[in-house]
Image (cartoon, rainbow, N blue to C red; front, side, top):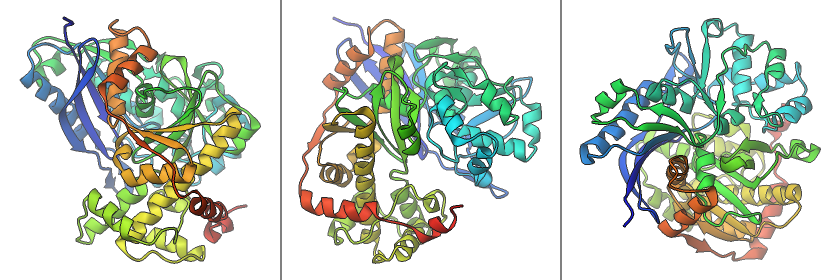
Length: 501
């Protein structure tokens, strides 16, 4: 009989976090949630920050829950977060300030200013990364432009997962999959793009060494082990620490004819390739090449995702109306179809303050019926997101040169049956939904590979398939969605057009 190994997966998303125990019996994974918590930005003096000390306390609380329930030390501890954000350490290893949230306004317009220093084409040719003002490159460039004193004092830059890895293990590193999200990493040379950063006067001495997924960083620091109540120490393992890298690692049956959507606050939609795609067409379509687990490249597009509905729900809560997700979807089902559409990636939705008002204003500017009811607003968001998926699917098929037959949706968004069904309808493809906890499963399987309990990514994916239930959706009502996609593709926001040079 196989002995069961316990692995701890810390999964910090952009809106919530969880600490999950993964039990591996040699054939299947079984998950048990230790701790779940909110992850909300904090506004201070007009700027948005992450509450990293509270997150650190929640991480330790989750490990402490494990220590209170199980006598054996975990076989590994892995951690994944969102990308692009970072903390800066001084020469003593002390955090210099509260890390900024990627939606903070300090990067407004910084991408365009950066292109005056280095043209877009040159940046993409070296980094292969989608142009978004939230990228680490533009966050650092904004600090240079504003003579931020933290840059002078900084001795180490640690991306968000690596900051927590440092507090867990004492090791200052940059894990590969997260480093590739920054637009500061050379996609061909597989190293920091020091020459590019130098052209922006961004200091490079603070960039730590890059390690690959599956690297054992060392044991949990004794002080941390004592704080959480572990009687024995445990290895800290650098997994695919960008949460999408871990989520994609856990997708069953992922092959050359599959397209994935890691669905949550963001939707990351893409394919696995063996090499980065750095063509003029990829640049024109604004795709990204991020590092994956097992030597893969994730060719994908970042899409705004369920952020639109999350922010609507938050606004309605401020107004005294607390809706559960199931209630919102029921109201959306009752609303008329195909009335109002938006581009989920329009900059007006990045951080509007009042999302329902921003959605209505967009529809008004584009000459569409204005969604007034709660159900109409939610339906507008979900239909638009499914149509965005259709658009990205077509672009990806053009880049890889063949048909992608199956859409595989993982993450929290795969529980949204309306979104999954609409995705099948809009894309006219089979949709397979699950697993929900893909990031945690990807973390655990990479840890198991690092400890020699699994031999490969393919073997790990087979184990995930044996451990979870998947839901399948088939396309319907093709003609109506084709007509609506034509409308979606022709959307032009006058406010956005007026800002173009």
